[in-house]
Image (cartoon, rainbow, N blue to C red; front, top):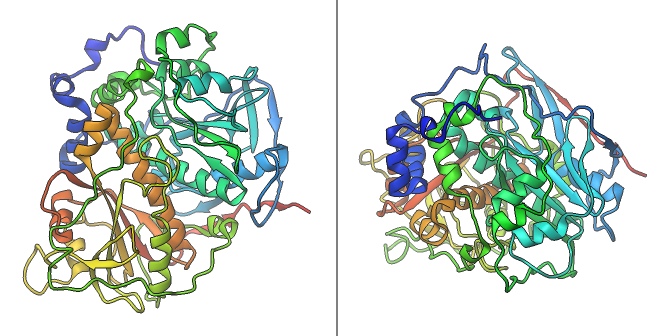
Length: 541
């Protein structure tokens, strides 16, 4: 919990306070994306760090609801979100997939979803008809936080009406889990991870015949109070109602305005459960605290109406003399999602590809499918996600090497970029390598995906909450990209250590408003010195 002896003013540096006046969300995006030296200047070692919290958030002394471990090996449609279905959804949506043992022992636990250094900063809360729960992933159980049906309150907090959902999931960012290493930069990591988890929960829900509605906009105070969260230490980031297919998941807007103060007054407080850590986030992370607080919503009248994001188009994608590649009519079956999630991998600590031959046409087709819209308050239902996919091909069967923009309407690949901002004759992959901070090995890399957003659209539409929206929408798509890669045996490594200006140059993007917020390396990798122990589900009959 935040140190009560530290005032708000004392948590802010002069620079952070000035940034807040100028638009703290925009400024934080500039620092966290464009100026890595400044973003990482307070980074701490992950080894022998006295601020390191426990690996998992565990509630003690509260009623527990064990979930069955007998979950199906293949995901299929369900008729109700009963206990077995809920167990399956949580197991594949958020559960632990394996343990890894290596020489340093710092990344032992892995989920179905990528997490920065496996820190698992994002927590999952489940609101059902009988109560509000925290999902205890390592023990695959629900911990009861408060009794009663609070789904109507969450509908009011999101400014929506309509049929009650089967359940409402809430994702929160437990900042200390990442901030003990990354300090202020943890806000980028937590919002990215919230998007990745949202993307996975959506995929698993779809496979089970459920439909999710993503709410980036909601009244923060009552949602945090409902879950017993300290808004400086662990704020709610995403509200995700789940409906059975065809049960009216459109979530029409309420006509009356709700205020955070009035709705919060209807919620009895519960004591926040704090993960043991030597870190007081509000004091140690002034920039993070400033952008987090600036994003809070106080009434539903201020929620932005859903409008499509303008397309992010490279300067030379059209009319460059290089013809687009039409998506071939390739028959690519849907993957066994359960198996893909169990095998999904970000590669070893040092991302070191091995030489491999990969069907580029199949990967291309799978990437084209990721563009289907998800019900979200960031865009109209069914519209493409407001994030553009750029593909740099190094070695894919059937796709020439080079940089491409993936047309969300047709699936065509448009050649883009001048080819090299670093000198004549430089191939596209080498150009990307040169604007990536040294670490991953690029030899034998198959491809690199960049996800690009329009930062001006996000901040003009959502204000300082736009930082969350950008990272969470891009994270949703990033997980789909990683699943598409995993379906073909590729590791997908999300790498934030790149120079955004250099990436824009390689991709032919001439305006700074276009922000490459994700870089994902795709290749086959070896074990890299790891001993991997999968946590296989006990198959249901």
